[in-house]
Length: 166
Image (cartoon, helix red, strand yellow):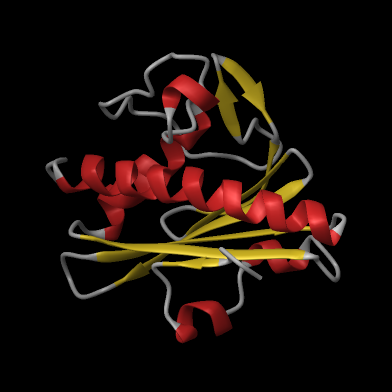
């Protein structure tokens, strides 16, 4: 599908993601990835903070509110909690979490898994997979839209993690 991959390798695409357990026969499958020059412990803290804001284009997906640019010391995410927040209001639900390794949630009928893969001692591959069952034409539009938003989100998380001291 057009726009279904950005920043990922064939190995990233072939791996199993927790979101795969929640959607049978998805019509939308999209993979995104970025190498972050920070250890997984730092990257995880930013991924876990997605519960507070989307970290993509705030003027679009956060009603103009700026996503936090500092870590706020949140407790570890738990299944059942809101997955993210838009304009200060909780959205979606966390479905699965393995602190330091993966966060999976659902929002707007899509299931997303953020997976952290160590890449040496001081770097991390931050991977995101999105799956959803929907009309194939709608899936194409959502895939392209997700490409724009998820790319910005991962690049923002990368930038924030790389400037965060361990």
